[in-house]
Length: 93
Image (tube, rainbow, N blue to C red):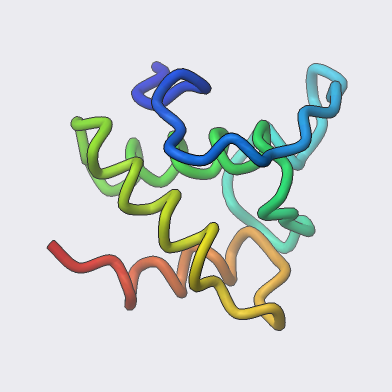
């Protein structure tokens, strides 16, 4: 189920690379896979995965996640699971 898509993105400065069907950067669950916050497909994948895991249903929640990732994610956080933990602490409503 896709809750958040390219049309929901606030920022437009992402790169858009093609990924294979089962590439861990855009499939599976958040793990120790490297995360690139400048890559639109990875941002959309992670936002959708976390929205499902945390039972969020509204695109504006995805926008909050996107803005945090885009503007405030520390450079030393480079893995999907680290982004997940960082968002859990920093995502406030």
